[in-house]
Length: 577
Image 1 (cartoon, rainbow, N blue to C red):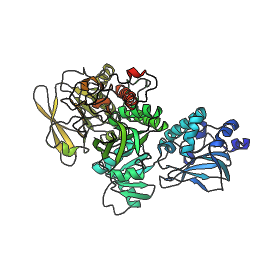
Image 2 (image 1 turned 90 degrees about the horizontal axis):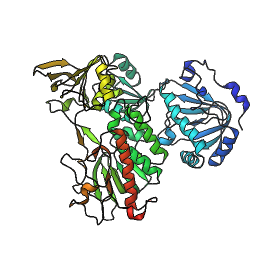
Image 3 (image 1 turned 135 degrees about the vertical axis):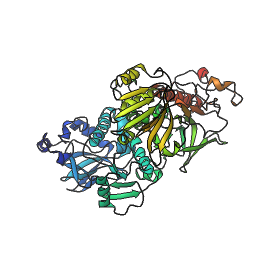
Image 4 (image 1 turned 180 degrees about the vertical axis):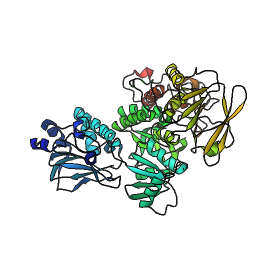
């Protein structure tokens, strides 16, 4: 039963920032903190178990894994953060409200603590019980789902810090750690130790630092110079896989792999996504996508990828990162065996290769040694911070280059967009028009970057002007978005590629000697039966996010046909290309 007297103790709208870290009454956000009715509480009770807590007893603590949601029947709880090194109460709430956030569903440790403010009676819901409730009571489940997402949004604009990464802007290991956290939407703060204030703050918790980055939670140091796998294991990005054999393995977590995961999991296929870094692929390197249907105001590539990732999790897909696939082979029992650089070995009945592409490299002396030290192949908040108030250079004439130039112009003193051709014909017209109107972007046609300067970090570039003159310019960052090379080198020779390495599928392999089956291949099936391709690594595809997600869905249709699970098509059409 919901106690009416609880209303009298709700935080006031003018509550100070120090009390809640949000600057206003968080309970006024009814999406983040819906109050359940007595009827809804009655619906919920069969899914969980009643639990009692005494005042100041933790319901769960920051770092707990797994942790549970609690629906408050009586009493009050407080949500507490210690990641800043001090105890900060974000919010208090009582009967009718429920605890938890999105990490209940991402299966990661809790980022905050929940404590009983008074004696508390509650219904405990485990992550498994929540999923059961989502299925059997979808309208009620939607309240929880939307609440969990919105709470994370509020948390990230509050005083919440999460993990703290200490390291210099020129330290590649530090940038690698920050990239892993950013790509996987792990709350964190990066403190650049080349700034004296941050160096002093680090000395307060660790005087003798031998190597970077230093990863801390509040005043507690967790790691010095962790490997990517160690950090991922701590964050539970890598977990014990719940299945011995999956219906479908997605090799790549970009738009195509994520789209495939949503459709496969929602249609009852056990699905596992493997990626070397985290959800998003090349889309996560895109600062803003404005021509994706349904987002008239545009959306950051990383944010779009995270939404699709959550959607896939909602339907039960599994993710395992970092997992850098190094081999794919078909066993005698026709199961596919995938091994990774990190030592994982997984089996699947089918495989969708959605490995995407890499941007091309400029053939310049010294360029490879500066990758991550001023030479970048993505333009996100991480890289833009390194170029604040300084000139930068972007190479390319496609949408990715244009979006990067627009994004960097918000913080850089000037952005030079270096274009080898004479126009922006490869770019979407809306984007080209914005670039032409942007006073901070200088478009340099018929020009090329022909050299770079710098030892530990890039300091300058050499540009050949249209008249052939060489010009030296200082720069804080060189962003390269030219050409694409498919990430297909790890695949066996039995999977046929074109001259550029893109995968051939469907009709293109039907008459090829490598196709050994007595039937026609499915639409996006490769020359190795049971292995499908989707997205940018597949030959002949449009290199657009929307197409990649759709291609992932098409691959799932082919998987159904291969597995003989088609329900809505006549049997005669089962193997049509």
